[in-house]
Image (cartoon, rainbow, N blue to C red; front, side, top):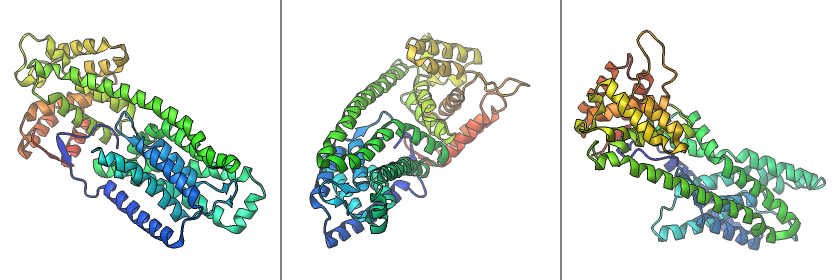
Length: 434
C-alpha cells in the first residue's frame, strides 16, 4: 500500500481489490498444496532449501518510506525457484507450477508467522501479491522446462537459450506486482488506474530491478555451482536491503519532524487541533484522484502539513485559525512568512514555493489560469478553505454548504478541477468524528 491513508474519513469501496486478491491467492494455494501433497514433492531437498530462504526473506521484509512493504530476498528466491531449469547433479528441475506455488506460499507464510506472533501486521495482501507474481512467472517458464521436446531442443543450445528465456520471463513478471498493487489501490481509493500504476512502477523500479536481477541470477548460478549459489547470490541483495532500510528510516524521521513542526500552530492556539492532519490527508486523496505522481504527492504532503506555519507571526490568533476569514493581503503575508520558515531547510525549496503560492487565486480577472500557481498550492487552498468552513461538523449539510461556498469562488479563487475532485473524494468516503 502506498502513501498515508485518509485518516479522518473511512472509505467504502464497492469491491475491495485486496479481498479479491487474497481470495484468489488463497484458492490457488489450497489447490497447489493439495496437489503437491498428493503427487509428492519433486527434489524435496531443493524445495526445502528454497522454502527456508523464502521464509527468511519474509521475516526480514522491508517497509519502504511510503509504507509499501516488500520482501526482496523472499521474492527473489521465489522467482529463482520458478525460473529454475537445471540442477547441478540431478539434471532437469522437474517441479511443477503448482509445486512452485506451494513452496513459495509455505515459505512466505512461515516467514510471516513471527511478525504475527510479535503483534505486527501479517501483510497477507502483500503475500498474496507476491504469490500471484511467482505463479505468473511459473506459468510462463515452467511449461518450457517440463515439456520434453522443448527442453531437449533448448538444451542443445544451452546455456544461451535458457539465459534468454529466464531474463525474458523475469522482465515480463517484473511489473506484475505493481499492476496488482495499482488495481487494489484503484478499488480502495477510486483513483485513476493509470496514474496509480505509474506511481507503483516508479516506487518499485529500484528495488524491483534488484529483485528481478537476483531472481534471474539464482537459477543460472545453481546450474553451475549448485545450491551453494543461493546464499551467495542473495548476499548483495541483503546488503542493498540494509542500505535501503537506513534510507527509509531517514525519510520517516523527516516526515515525523515535519509533522511535529506542523503541530506548533495547534500547541500555540493558532489553529484547531487536527487541522493540519485533516488538510494533509484530504489533500493527498485529491492529489491521487487528480493523478499526481509520487514525487509531487510527497511535496503536497509536506506543504499541507506546514501550510499554516505563517500564523505564528500573528499577534492575535485568527478565530479558529480560519484564514478564509481574513483579507487576501493578510493571507499572502501569512503564506510568505510560512514559506520563509520552510526555506530555512534548503532541501524543501519546492515545498516552500507551494506554501507561498497557496494564498494566490488560480487565475486573475480576464486572464487564463496562472501557471505560476502550482497544482499542489491549488489543492491546499481548496482543502484548507473547506476545513475552515466545515470546522468540527460532520453532517452532510455542513459538507454540502462548504462545497457550495467553494463553488461560488470558482471564478477566480478556487480551481474548478480541484473543487470537482474534492466533491468526488467526499462522495467516496464516510466522515468519522473529528
